[in-house]
Length: 372
Image (cartoon, rainbow, N blue to C red; front, side):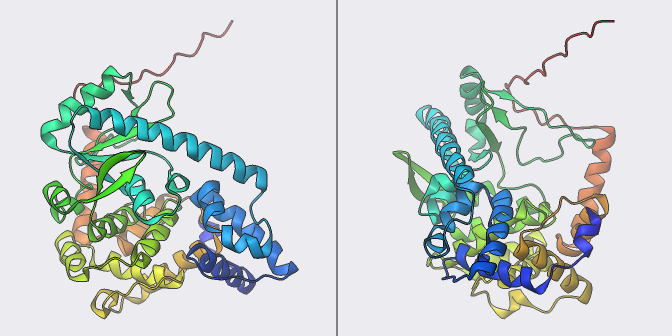
């Protein structure tokens, strides 16, 4: 894996990736026969990183000119599953809303409705809900009564986040709910509080429901803190795309508010790297120069390495050393990184369970005994 990140892509791959990202962000694309073969290979890789449904949806206008770029059977299966998962997630959200529980939808579920023309195409993974702490017990009780259970996540450090809990999974394991009591884990939580997200939340409609999502500035800040937490790895590709489309959505965007959140949370370096990455992907951010301030040479090289991988859709899983290097170069301020790792060390000795209050833990099925 580490070897992949050290070998740069060729010029043809970069050109193809740049054209592909232009199409993802709504630009026009023309392709000859030879270019189309490279573009189709890129499209299959980007579908692995985004989801077949989302890649096929965003590349739809380009495919009207180039012909199919993603295997039609794969795309059709992706659309069917995304539609199924979307409806199941709507049902889970409706369950909580019907109990009068106050919450704000976070991350992908909210962004799917706020910036995507076809929300179900963006539905991937969990539903993240920021719950009013006063309603937390009622939320877990309602889910437990419906047969949801907490799904253990193997980790040598235990569960160290104080902002959320283990995923709460439906009886058939198709839907997972992440309940949050803070918008994101420390150090992001010292900048953006649950009270602020609730106060600035904006309405949206989903499946006949009137719901709330974060203000655009809060949504962008959470994309930044999450891609830093992911160390700009494979999971960050969707976050980079979300950020690019959020900034292109035409809403009034208060960069002064974002700057205040970044300063309070210690994410100035991460923001400069994120904006540089978005620029390399072809996004127009409109960010003030102060947020795109010059960065150190080592950080610049790391951003360029990440950008090449994202552009060409060749983003390997990170090993221990890659994670450490990215965290030190592209994460929050050094003191926060040191404190995060101290929390991990404490977790080795006293691992947290992450079990939501009043929620049973899903028991792993026992393996049958083998015949002697």
